[in-house]
Image (cartoon, rainbow, N blue to C red; front, top):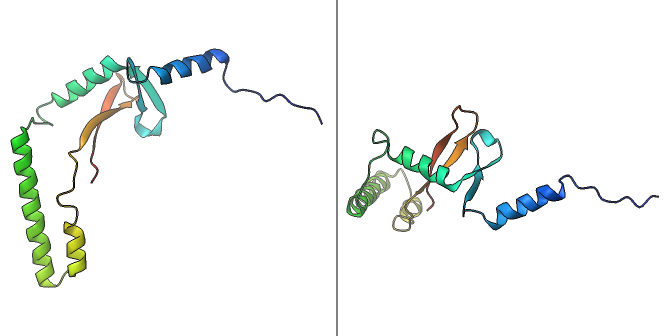
Length: 135
């Protein structure tokens, strides 16, 4: 049996380029996903920032809110949630355990963050807005 040398699927030049991308990630180049699961894409950081500002500047879609306004909105949501769950608890539509579960994370939350993924099938290429919320 021959001792076969393992073959590489990328050249040394390509490996070096990938190492440089990883090393300088998010300094000048941003690597993120693309729309429709088309794979990863890289873009100049300034282009990503410009596209985010362009999208967030669309006053028909987004409105700027102060921290006080956000706190008021969150407080209203918490009050409405508590009232809805309590109403369903008293009507017998849910158990105490279910009500406790529904209210258990009411004060444990993070404000969602905004980012884009590139729609590379569009001409010109634009960003698809993502507002990711956890907790």
